[in-house]
Length: 390
Ligand SMILES: Cc1ncc(COP(=O)(O)O)c(C=O)c1O
Image 1 (cartoon, helix red, strand yellow):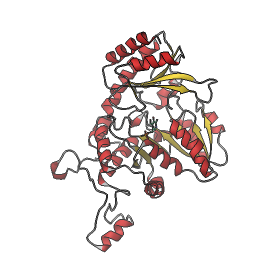
Image 2 (cartoon, rainbow, N blue to C red):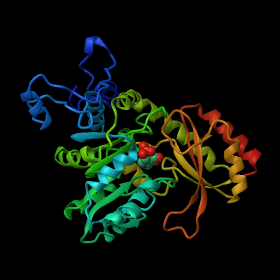
Image 3 (cartoon, rainbow, N blue to C red):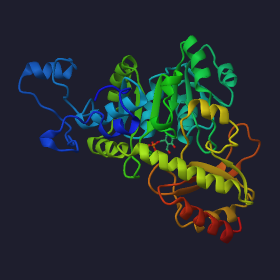
């Protein structure tokens, strides 16, 4: 099965790229090797230079059949020509950003992007003379006004982290294209199940595969998806030289996770909407940040560019008393205290901070609902709300 337009999402998730069965094995083998050797010097020479007629693999930092299979599956889902798998989501973000900047370049980025991405842009890249302007991203005009003659990259994350703000992707990429500026987006929240940013003109789509793609909290991975022309450059430089590729075994696990991505996302959407709506009605809750709620302030944009929402959301408690917040978090039994999300298990994390446009930092509690029964999750939240006096 070769075309990404041919069949429905769940069919492609189950079968795309998996037609070749070694010895009839339904699960593809793991090519757990760092090296591929040759019989002749001719083969060796054409393999090393990547001659399309020559042997396809010579060294797993450059390419590996198991990793390739997972990459083709993800590119098919995103509707891009190519995908490269990296060891973590941050690795993918780093190679994507590095491929778009040089000394003196300027980046416009969403201020509520994933924390380490913000640190990479604001602190680490400063060493190399790269400047950044952070914007809320709430209006396309604000993003466009931040562009300078030196801008080479607009970095988006929609919905963004912690308080889940959307950016109008199409309006932003239209101007970026006219001005020759590359756009990149972190699409980890949506996955290709709920959004394909290339449909709205984005050049580079990035994922943390650690989250929904893997889905079982047992691997770290990252993905960069883009055109062949851009990937040829990016793979030769940032991927091969920085060397942060994904190993065969986690790539195989990632593929296993991907086969059930569609049904897991449907379930996360249902549970997220049930639990977030319940939280929205509790007297202890000031406001819920969830893109799936009917009263989500950017509802129109949500409907335009997303096909669904997940079970990752947050809420601001009325009380800002740290002790009561900690009692609530520690009193939860099904929601475990942990930073990641996207797996089968429910998680909670309290965060103290603010986007650039809030006057004061506030406590916000992020919840991720796993695959447990929504009624059990609500019971757990109810008992801890009561016991903690939140
Ligand atoms: C939105 C988002 N992007 C990227 C990352 C980084 O991914 P990884 O932890 O795989 O490096 C995370 C991790 O929490 C995330 O939440």
